[in-house]
Image (cartoon, rainbow, N blue to C red; front, side):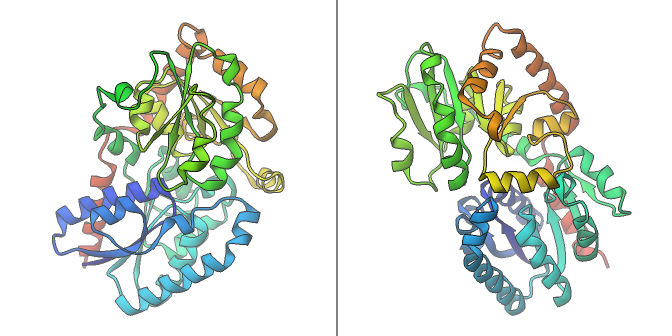
Length: 370
């Protein structure tokens, strides 16, 4: 069968790759093309465009990139018409993917959605559009099944693919030596993978360096972003940069500072106490604040249904607040034990690894239905 996959950011690229690997096990004749990154390319998806051109957040950033987005959308429509895949598989990235879903539905192409856009957070009415344009939805957060049931829309909960990725992780015993790190406890710094995420958070994350002289700060760099930007933060050797080694970094860290996103859940599963931070353009923030329907932004707290990790958002994301919250979760502090207990609850709710396998199994089954 012919598949067309679209992932619009880094985690979606990774999850899309794992999904397609499982699809190929069940459909050896599978052919796939679409939008993604290195992970999907290595898994065998022929890329017509790299997601890096489209990985943006914020109102002004989207306005600036409207031409790029429109061009990519037109290209996808053209390829769907010319190649007529058996199924379009959309991975998160709601704004772009829902436009593609509507077009594909009119074209008569079956539409599957893997990893629902976060419509329960701030765009609830989009559930009706999903019901109209998406043939099958495969969700990865436990509460999403109940959410869609309110709209009389049956979805499949497949578990969380983050567990799949972490279950495949084997720690590097020489991580410290290979990266020339010091013999000091590590504060892991995860500023995200999008350019505007990194540039709006990394400076503030590292501003508390003087308050922790006994620790070394290690930044999780990504190779799709220029290394010259990270290099300016080395601070005479007190800040280290490691590239594409986030799980190894977390495996060796005492605590972490994490930009809100998939990384907050990865950090929780690897059982590293964290402070979650987030900051965007102030106009974007106030627009989002008026629209948002949930009490938390981190996946950890959303899944738990309560505050497990501290979230420092916008003006609360200050050096003083970050320093204070980080000190509460250091080794030996009571706040550390509370977070670890909360992580146990989160991990029990999301279940076991196998999301990619289960989703692929269901997709192939639905495609083969008469």
